[in-house]
Amino acid sequence: MAELLAKSKQKLASFSVGQKVKGRVLGKSPQALLLDIGGKSEGVVTGKAFGEAKDYIKTLKVGDEVLASVIIAESREGNVVLSLRQAMFDTSWENLEKVKTSGEPVAVVARAVNPSGVTVQVENINGFIPTTQLGKEAVKAPQSLVGKYFKAVVIEVDRNQNKLVLSEKEVSDAKDIQEAKEALAKIKEGEIFDGVVTTVANFGCFVKLPVGIEGLVHISELAWGRVGKTTDIVAKGDKVKVKVIGKRDGKLALSLKQAKEDPWTAAVGKYKKDTKVTGRVARLSDFGVFVEVEPGIEGLIHMTNIPPATKLQEGGQVICYVQDIDAKAKKLSLGLVLSVKPIGYK
Image (cartoon, rainbow, N blue to C red):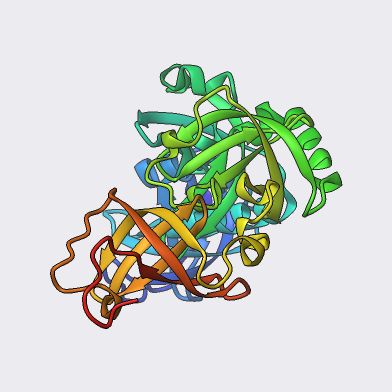
């Protein structure tokens, strides 16, 4: 390297710290990299800057062009000292974008663990593996991964947002995931399965099907009637019947209520005009009172049909009569049956 530097007799151009320059590789040694940075000057990557880019420099050959940053405008030896950090990062991001497309696993090292997942480093880029993307063994003791090298698959990469998300389970649980994908491909929307509730959450529950994969039943799909809490309808371990209502991005959407008959299907025959029904006050509104006459079917007593002196409370039982029904629109209009009828009230 000293010989290469000695051969340079040209006058150095003016450079400033932080300036970005394009360079062409002239030569490299175990401790330094020499770059032509403009025809009149040579730059050198050495010391700490060489160490941090050592793995990247191994990939370079004479004639390659790189983008470097000036860290010393002119050293005692008269050289422009450069850093390849930005070039190294740009190359790393490009590599990560390629492996995301190919699906090829990359080597990572875990740096830290938090409640949301594991922070890792990949080619000098910081990435993150969410807890949901850890394999069944790794998720048992994520702290044991810290300091260790392992493989993961890139599932999201955004250089502008400096965002890198990976999946460890796509490697460690690859066989299980492939089997699940094959099973999912065979499932058709509209099919009904017997399943077992595996997890209950405030937004719904997860149900495992006989084919070995799980799907989500959103709280809105638990029952035809109004649902306050998921635990009011299901508990972990319950055997349930579910209908497949959607498949998207490898995820399965299920419904408990659609596996049963919609109560509005038989409503027209049950709730004919002037029929008396007993119901429970479901909720009060500015324009009337909603009454649940059976799970999944609510009717409205309009405020004009409620005498001023009559007070109704949520949860209270009321006797009504059917004024009108539109099963297609799922609307039921009710009138209030009073023991003492005001003048002019039916």
